[in-house]
Amino acid sequence: QRCDWASVQFDDAAVADYFDRQVELGRQPEEFGRVWIHTHPGNCPRPSAVDEETFARVCGHCQWAVMLIIAAGGATYARIAFGVGPGASALRRSASAT
Image 1 (spheres, rainbow, N blue to C red):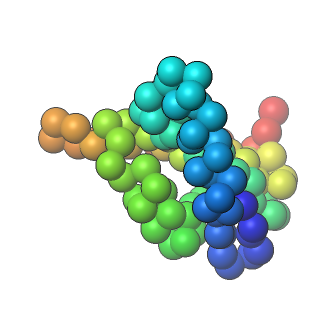
Image 2 (image 1 turned 135 degrees about the vertical axis):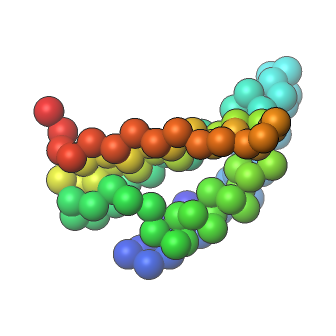
């Protein structure tokens, strides 16, 4: 992926190659394509509007998905979202790394 302070752009060909390799190994997309881990510069791990849009677009169709953000200062943000049943999400945020 290519990122800067205001945007994220996945390398579509690389993502497609990864998915192809995993499927060739006998895995289903829901086994390997629903966790997004990335970093943020500075001390703030909260998701940006771009992060939220990307998470919804890429993982919104999944039964469940995780977004984990690690800020350069050590703080973390993690959220699991459920897309089945009534839907739900759970949040875990840390103030700093220990």
